[in-house]
Image 1 (tube, rainbow, N blue to C red):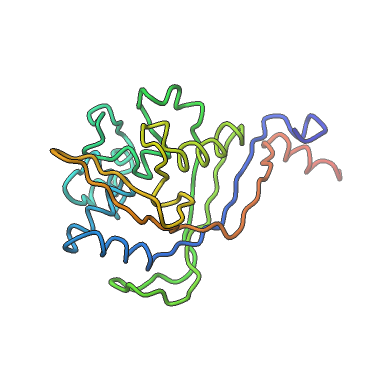
Image 2 (image 1 turned 180 degrees about the vertical axis):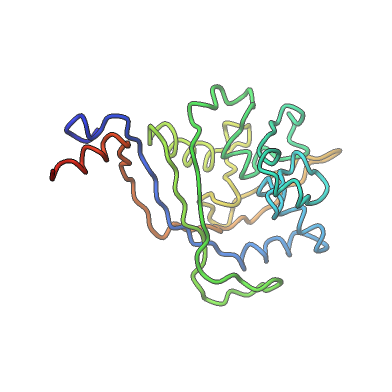
Length: 227
């Protein structure tokens, strides 16, 4: 921790990342693996774990629910106990990987929880456009955590880029994993599961830093140094 002790006490750590997103490439992947716009939308929800409104797939299995997505009291109040096989929300979905919630196969999920926030940057790619326009776009992401290794680094390496924790073998997170064009993504369904192939890298890290965030008491101490 930073010294003197008064500076480090009650502080925490912040991860900062600039993440470039290959929006056109992701849209093309959806288009190539779906038979209709409606199927593209459902496939995207299976990959992300949420619909565009933010409504979780586990609570809105068939279609987007904007009212649910806008309701902060409901759109994060769920677990996966009713879907152990991942037939509603795949185990490999980004949201389920990032926070497995009550999944028993994970162990103590709370050890790895983060406070995460992000905002987008760059111009939006016009709806329906499948060709890259060359613009830089993506998200600026921050995570607040007490232990960088146990929280952010663990989630990034073990939950996003290692499929063993959910029985997915070598599968990586389709959305944010460091895929190289040979990746796969499994969608459990009956009677036969569906498996997508040729997963590329859709999110590329363009910058990042680990920072220390001092506590309020440390800020007061620093403010008083010159007095």
